[in-house]
Image (cartoon, rainbow, N blue to C red; front, top):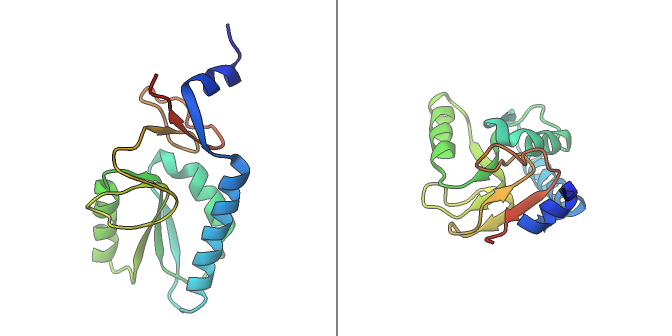
Length: 151
């Protein structure tokens, strides 16, 4: 039986290191704080589904959320359908502004842009780790983002 680290390297390719991921989250948090410093609108962060838990936690720890607007945070925006549905609901309920935020953003027609750490075309590979799971529900707890090798 091979060690887990060998298995991970054999079937997955690291997309961003854990250190670089945290650096990029810090930059994203700083951009949000700078933007929000110009407004008096209250801010609310909403984490979407199970996949957002790691990215959501790290991002919110780095942003002061008192007295601001709604950011919908998810691990990945793929088709954009879930995010679009939630944006519409929050706007219907009176949100001043709703901004989608994702660790990984795949270009799509439903959500034309979002705040993100990594951006890819729609036909890019399957991503796992940092909240995103494999088809069998595994790999969600990895501390960085990997793409599955096409072997």
